[in-house]
Length: 92
Image 1: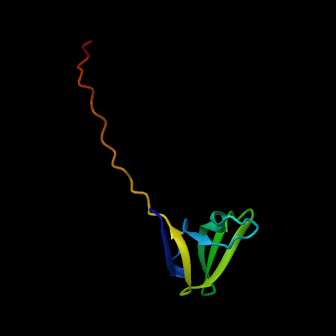
Image 2: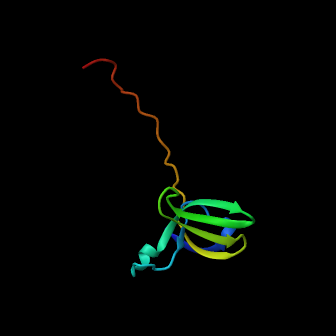
Image 3: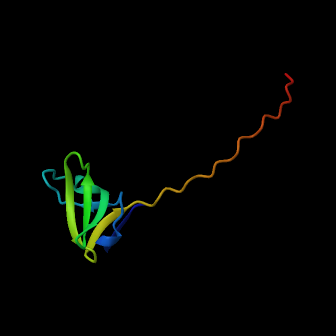
């Protein structure tokens, strides 16, 4: 289940999605971008979307500034069961 929530900028995490407006594409799905890095610089929160080496977006926010994000629940690691021993004793 996806959660669309409002948090302080200081609580944004990598892999959260932030709204970047519709830009050149009118489809609203493409307006959400994945946060790839979160940094604090000069008391501000810097959210980076996309690849640092290529085109990317930067969002500068005050630490307590409210921002709407989409956050997916963290994947729960499944328990792996130990492999069952073969019940055979070398007999065919």
